[in-house]
Image (cartoon, rainbow, N blue to C red; front, side):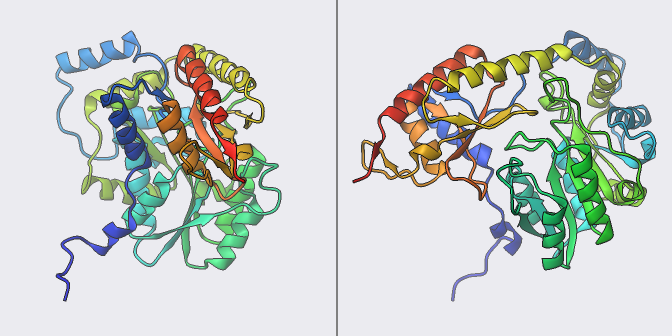
Length: 406
């Protein structure tokens, strides 16, 4: 008889972090002396502004480092409502400030779902959502787009959500990213409201991770949500500073904004878990939210996106998806699916492509098999232009080493 496991059965439903695995692979190559062009990281360019660093130093000097309880500093909670353009439906009391957006989502999942429950998750979104749902004890079920998926960039329709809810009557919530990491697509206001209405009609929470909601290009902005009863009662927004401000990832400040009963319960769950972020970083986040936004960041990222598009166009057969938001771009390597590497590997998936590009091209990318067209790979364009140019050049050389089987 095998000895009983020392770990909870729940642990065996959780996969290691994809980003951690990618970083480990890249670091191994770097230690061996190879120069790896990293197109996997989505960190924003630049450092935390001098003004925000000064706020942090002043806060430490003035003694604002006492332990905190509760849902966050009241001025910050009020500023979050303004930041999210939710003043007509929310107040600061409907906001929970957390040590990062993932912590905010974890606290919400902990109180709206549990063992035996189903939580639908956008199949095109970053895989961390699946693991977070599993940690909460619920069962993550991918919600896949139906007819016309490729034409709308793999975005879900209200009909897709309704179909899955009918198949899964025990569903407690839908987790959706907008803008979407990994596809970089963005749902408009009509699409968002239609999905929220379907969720509300089924008594299901619609949890929207809008972490990239400020990184929207070509003169557009994140869609405004009208204060409908469905939005008021069934919609929770997750956000934070990590993908809105230069160098802000280490601040670890995020938030959830939603119905009062959900936020009150999530606050209790957080108090017994990770606890709130410190007073100093909350004061820095407050200053960031109240200051005029850095439009130069958007212009810089737009320029990098367009530069990447031009570089990709130099490789015949390689296509890129439209990028209205985020710092990511999907590259379509479908033309190379089924080819054979110089050592005899057959490229059958985007994972195979990612492995090959790292091994032969010294380029780190993220595989993105979404259940749609094969051969999709996610790259970040938040890197310096010389890194982007070098990476694409290496990709072209690596692709030249592939041959057709037979």
